[in-house]
Length: 221
Image (tube, rainbow, N blue to C red):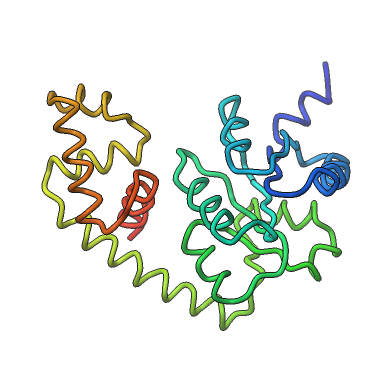
């Protein structure tokens, strides 16, 4: 019996995104020594993590806070919108306003540099288990309150959709294409495109990823 294979079955499958080549190599070397972690790969952008998910779900994606601000936010949003999303862990120091936005866009935790030195593999295991946002209690309470009211708004907008618009929004959240939606709803693809545009307008979003996030948040309450 191969005990190594048995160990990997329960390992936390993860990826590293946004770090430069030298740093990602160093992180991989650090993390690969932890028996409870399985580093599937690294990439400078979120597309690499999405490619890794084609061969199996990721439990954690470790993201560099040093990425361009817009790219960092988009990375969190994109990963939060996939089916069975991973826990997104931002590594590095960020200001409170950015931290607030990252949590609202799907980040699970932010590891400040001072905490990383403690034991990164152990911290990742704790986060995988549902703990450790690495903010003080007051800041976390403020974020939770803001997130609740944000979800209420998403719910109100979602409930303002008619039956066909809801079907389109829910289908997009499940990853369906316009062609697949058209077949499921017995309408033309052109009709679906018009419905998608209407849904974006009513939800106050600008693309399909945002539709998926809005639907998820609306159903969270």
